Length: 198
Image (cartoon, rainbow, N blue to C red; front, side, top):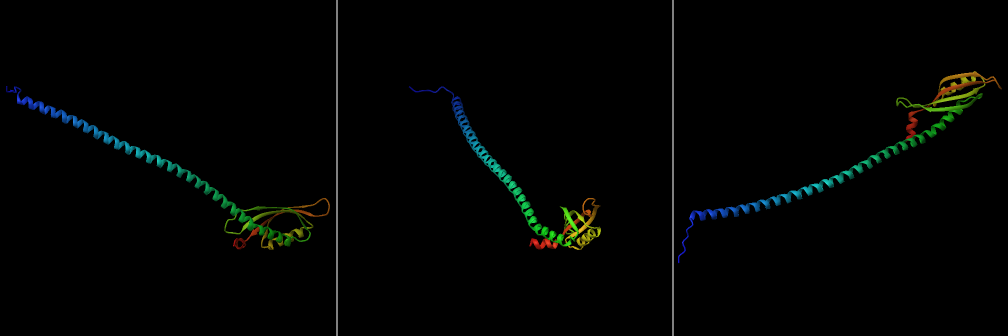
């Protein structure tokens, strides 16, 4: 017996198209899911790589900060060492000056002058003139002319120069003498300092 299809051919076509639509829709959903998964994986890997780079940069920055702190500390130590070396050099250069000053002092001190104490203070060097040291002598002289002679000899010296005679008193006990306080300068010529530096 022959089979007769009573369904309308349009209905069959609609069902066929409907089936194709759902298959295509399903494939599109799967494809969209795969694309989303692929994009998500790529973006996550890029974020992880960026996080790793940031962490590496942060560790390098901390290492550089430590190194700059160490460099600053070494610079300070270097400056302190340079200051110490300059101080030692100045002391070594001034050592002969003290000897020269004592030699001059012995030469300019006449008989009848007895030096009791003396102090020395450094005055700042202006650069325009030779460096100077302030000297304060206290002593006894047999007579006023002896004290005057001491001052004249000191002024004629190239390394000592009188500034002011501060105090002259007659001694009341013992031998007759004049107590005096004399301010003077020790002059260190620049050319002498330069020769010693060489």
